[in-house]
Length: 157
Image (tube, rainbow, N blue to C red; front, side, top):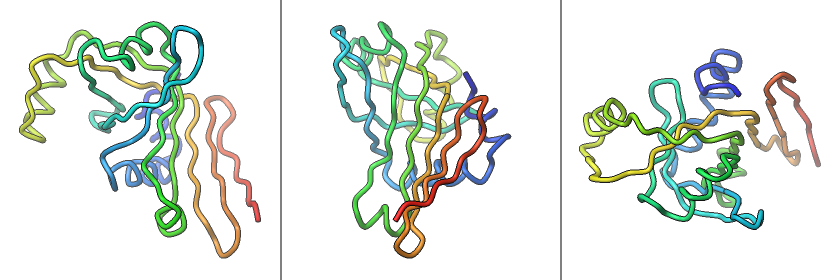
């Protein structure tokens, strides 16, 4: 698994694009796996800081329990037809690590946002795949990176 910093060092332009798409609307959609293996989609606010992608969620929420049981995830920025056409789209997949040593992260979060949650289930996301979608004329451009494979570009009409 690659940390966000490792991915960004290898693909700085793509990392900047993806971070900008997630920053455009702080809310994103997180896909996790339920006990029975079926997918669950939940809202989350990813935080790109300190070379990592983080997500805090309500203590013992279903998405938190899902990730503690099976750490695989997919994260999708909020997008509409207009935003995909004008600004693009971004997705990240990988595994989540439950983070119990939260003091440094929470201090940093408070310093940046003024938010100081009482209880938080915190996860750090490692990445195995990052996808960037943009349009050029009547083509959709899919730029995908996978750990160990590098980047692939596909144009679709």
